[in-house]
Image: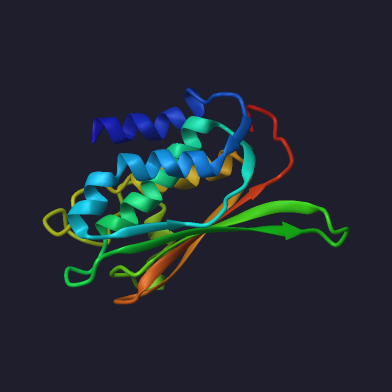
Length: 178
Protein backbone atom coordinates (compact mmCIF):
# COMPACT_ATOMS: atom_id res chain seq x y z
CA UNK A 1 0.00 0.00 0.00
CA UNK A 2 2.77 2.44 0.95
CA UNK A 3 4.66 1.60 -2.27
CA UNK A 4 1.55 2.37 -4.33
CA UNK A 5 0.91 5.64 -2.50
CA UNK A 6 4.52 6.66 -3.11
CA UNK A 7 4.08 5.76 -6.77
CA UNK A 8 1.01 7.97 -6.94
CA UNK A 9 2.75 10.96 -5.34
CA UNK A 10 5.91 10.53 -7.45
CA UNK A 11 4.04 11.07 -10.71
CA UNK A 12 4.43 14.80 -10.18
CA UNK A 13 7.12 15.10 -7.50
CA UNK A 14 9.77 12.96 -9.21
CA UNK A 15 8.79 13.53 -12.80
CA UNK A 16 11.53 13.41 -15.43
CA UNK A 17 11.85 15.62 -18.51
CA UNK A 18 10.01 14.55 -21.64
CA UNK A 19 12.17 12.84 -24.24
CA UNK A 20 11.33 10.75 -27.33
CA UNK A 21 10.04 7.40 -26.02
CA UNK A 22 9.59 4.42 -28.36
CA UNK A 23 6.47 2.71 -27.01
CA UNK A 24 7.44 -0.50 -28.86
CA UNK A 25 10.52 -0.74 -26.65
CA UNK A 26 8.48 0.11 -23.57
CA UNK A 27 6.04 -2.71 -24.40
CA UNK A 28 8.94 -5.16 -24.89
CA UNK A 29 10.09 -4.31 -21.36
CA UNK A 30 6.56 -4.52 -19.92
CA UNK A 31 5.93 -7.88 -21.58
CA UNK A 32 9.25 -9.15 -20.25
CA UNK A 33 8.38 -7.95 -16.73
CA UNK A 34 4.99 -9.70 -16.92
CA UNK A 35 6.34 -12.89 -18.52
CA UNK A 36 5.68 -15.04 -15.44
CA UNK A 37 2.06 -13.87 -15.15
CA UNK A 38 1.51 -14.35 -18.89
CA UNK A 39 2.92 -17.88 -18.67
CA UNK A 40 0.96 -18.80 -15.52
CA UNK A 41 -2.34 -17.74 -17.09
CA UNK A 42 -1.62 -19.20 -20.54
CA UNK A 43 -2.21 -15.69 -21.82
CA UNK A 44 -0.91 -13.64 -24.71
CA UNK A 45 -0.04 -9.99 -25.22
CA UNK A 46 -0.34 -8.88 -28.84
CA UNK A 47 1.28 -5.56 -29.71
CA UNK A 48 0.84 -3.72 -32.99
CA UNK A 49 3.34 -1.09 -34.13
CA UNK A 50 3.34 1.75 -31.60
CA UNK A 51 4.54 5.35 -31.99
CA UNK A 52 7.39 7.25 -30.44
CA UNK A 53 6.00 9.97 -28.17
CA UNK A 54 7.44 12.86 -26.16
CA UNK A 55 7.12 11.56 -22.62
CA UNK A 56 8.66 10.62 -19.32
CA UNK A 57 10.00 7.11 -20.09
CA UNK A 58 9.54 5.79 -16.55
CA UNK A 59 5.95 6.97 -16.45
CA UNK A 60 5.11 5.47 -19.86
CA UNK A 61 6.42 2.14 -18.61
CA UNK A 62 4.39 2.41 -15.41
CA UNK A 63 1.26 3.36 -17.36
CA UNK A 64 1.47 0.42 -19.76
CA UNK A 65 2.58 -2.01 -17.04
CA UNK A 66 -0.43 -1.08 -14.88
CA UNK A 67 -2.92 -1.42 -17.76
CA UNK A 68 -1.53 -4.66 -19.21
CA UNK A 69 -1.03 -6.06 -15.71
CA UNK A 70 -4.67 -5.34 -14.87
CA UNK A 71 -5.81 -6.96 -18.11
CA UNK A 72 -3.93 -10.11 -17.13
CA UNK A 73 -5.13 -9.97 -13.51
CA UNK A 74 -8.84 -9.52 -14.26
CA UNK A 75 -9.19 -12.47 -16.63
CA UNK A 76 -11.92 -15.10 -16.67
CA UNK A 77 -10.87 -18.23 -14.78
CA UNK A 78 -11.74 -20.56 -17.67
CA UNK A 79 -10.31 -18.44 -20.53
CA UNK A 80 -6.65 -17.52 -21.07
CA UNK A 81 -6.27 -13.73 -21.19
CA UNK A 82 -5.57 -12.06 -24.52
CA UNK A 83 -4.42 -8.45 -24.35
CA UNK A 84 -4.14 -6.33 -27.52
CA UNK A 85 -2.18 -3.08 -27.55
CA UNK A 86 -2.77 -0.85 -30.58
CA UNK A 87 -2.35 2.74 -31.63
CA UNK A 88 -3.66 5.07 -34.27
CA UNK A 89 -2.72 8.58 -35.27
CA UNK A 90 -5.49 11.16 -34.97
CA UNK A 91 -5.15 13.96 -37.50
CA UNK A 92 -6.33 17.55 -37.41
CA UNK A 93 -8.27 19.07 -40.33
CA UNK A 94 -4.91 20.23 -41.68
CA UNK A 95 -3.88 16.60 -42.05
CA UNK A 96 -1.19 16.96 -39.40
CA UNK A 97 -1.10 14.34 -36.64
CA UNK A 98 -2.35 15.99 -33.45
CA UNK A 99 -2.39 13.01 -31.09
CA UNK A 100 -1.97 9.28 -30.77
CA UNK A 101 -4.77 7.09 -29.47
CA UNK A 102 -3.59 3.95 -27.70
CA UNK A 103 -6.01 1.14 -26.89
CA UNK A 104 -5.44 -1.75 -24.52
CA UNK A 105 -8.18 -4.34 -25.05
CA UNK A 106 -8.73 -7.57 -23.13
CA UNK A 107 -11.13 -10.51 -23.05
CA UNK A 108 -11.40 -10.46 -19.26
CA UNK A 109 -14.21 -10.11 -16.76
CA UNK A 110 -15.03 -6.52 -17.71
CA UNK A 111 -17.02 -4.18 -15.48
CA UNK A 112 -20.30 -2.30 -15.50
CA UNK A 113 -19.65 1.10 -17.10
CA UNK A 114 -21.70 2.81 -14.38
CA UNK A 115 -18.47 2.51 -12.34
CA UNK A 116 -16.35 4.30 -14.96
CA UNK A 117 -15.79 7.40 -12.82
CA UNK A 118 -14.90 5.32 -9.76
CA UNK A 119 -12.23 3.12 -11.33
CA UNK A 120 -9.80 6.02 -11.80
CA UNK A 121 -10.14 7.28 -8.19
CA UNK A 122 -7.63 6.40 -5.45
CA UNK A 123 -8.53 3.34 -3.34
CA UNK A 124 -11.50 2.42 -5.53
CA UNK A 125 -11.99 -1.27 -6.10
CA UNK A 126 -14.85 -3.06 -7.81
CA UNK A 127 -13.90 -6.45 -6.33
CA UNK A 128 -12.92 -7.65 -2.88
CA UNK A 129 -9.26 -8.13 -1.96
CA UNK A 130 -10.04 -11.83 -1.58
CA UNK A 131 -11.01 -12.05 -5.25
CA UNK A 132 -8.19 -9.93 -6.73
CA UNK A 133 -5.08 -8.58 -5.04
CA UNK A 134 -4.27 -4.89 -5.26
CA UNK A 135 -4.67 -1.56 -3.52
CA UNK A 136 -7.03 0.29 -5.85
CA UNK A 137 -4.38 2.86 -6.74
CA UNK A 138 -3.12 1.59 -10.12
CA UNK A 139 -5.69 3.24 -12.38
CA UNK A 140 -5.48 6.49 -10.38
CA UNK A 141 -1.74 6.47 -11.13
CA UNK A 142 -2.52 5.85 -14.81
CA UNK A 143 -4.88 8.83 -14.95
CA UNK A 144 -2.34 11.08 -13.21
CA UNK A 145 0.41 10.03 -15.67
CA UNK A 146 -1.78 10.58 -18.72
CA UNK A 147 -2.96 13.98 -17.47
CA UNK A 148 0.63 15.06 -16.78
CA UNK A 149 1.34 14.26 -20.43
CA UNK A 150 -1.59 16.41 -21.60
CA UNK A 151 -3.73 13.43 -22.57
CA UNK A 152 -6.90 11.64 -21.54
CA UNK A 153 -7.79 8.14 -20.39
CA UNK A 154 -11.16 6.42 -20.35
CA UNK A 155 -12.55 2.93 -20.76
CA UNK A 156 -15.29 0.94 -22.45
CA UNK A 157 -16.37 -2.32 -20.90
CA UNK A 158 -18.97 -5.05 -20.85
CA UNK A 159 -19.24 -7.38 -17.88
CA UNK A 160 -18.18 -10.90 -18.84
CA UNK A 161 -16.77 -9.76 -22.20
CA UNK A 162 -13.78 -7.52 -21.48
CA UNK A 163 -12.53 -3.96 -21.36
CA UNK A 164 -10.80 -1.44 -23.59
CA UNK A 165 -8.77 1.37 -22.09
CA UNK A 166 -8.32 4.34 -24.42
CA UNK A 167 -5.46 6.78 -23.94
CA UNK A 168 -4.82 9.89 -26.01
CA UNK A 169 -1.39 11.51 -25.99
CA UNK A 170 -0.71 14.78 -27.85
CA UNK A 171 2.11 14.87 -30.37
CA UNK A 172 3.28 18.34 -29.45
CA UNK A 173 6.00 18.65 -26.86
CA UNK A 174 4.60 19.83 -23.55
CA UNK A 175 6.40 21.86 -20.92
CA UNK A 176 8.11 19.58 -18.42
CA UNK A 177 6.02 20.78 -15.50
CA UNK A 178 2.63 20.40 -17.16
